[in-house]
Length: 221
View 1: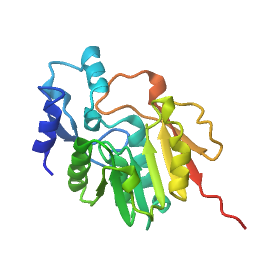
View 2: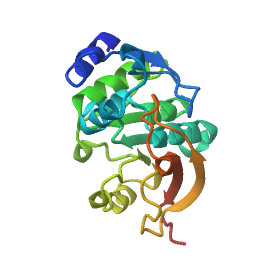
View 3: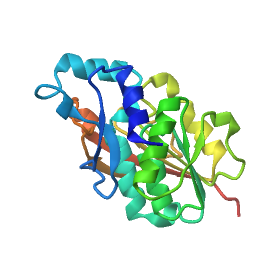
View 4: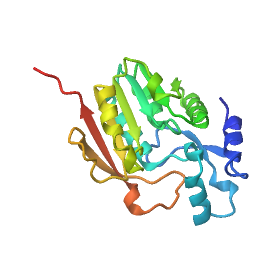
């Protein structure tokens, strides 16, 4: 997968759009093909930022929660080492790439958007790791040991995913900046870390405060 393919995807949303290799400030150890604001005259305007958020090219930005969770995994590789890790709603693929870099037996980028899977594949190659790609959560392998997810609770109707994730794997690592209370006691907060979307969309400060949660399978005995 090449940047040219990603540019073709991006042009469907932003006619002037193109990607450039950049290291997000919240996870500088990884480099991604992300939207290049240099194609615009000056900084991204409010209207342009709103258009980007409203359109499906979300994979061309690295959201704060993805950066924070990827950095957390790189700093705590024992959480994924030797495991089959599935990253739900993978977007740019940064979390799955971090899992692969941290020693996962298999790292799977799962996303319903074909462009996002193309981005994950291109970004994995850029970072010298290999990802498996999955376009259907229900077609995931049976031996997933860790589910990761970042910023998937932007819609309150997605809250049932919390129990879905816990039933799918013995360990869940979740990062979120939208919901202050998950409403699920099985998820224990691990850290609160500041980060900003890269390139910066000038979001409200409250959305730059990322909470990391961990849920573990309850073992009887």
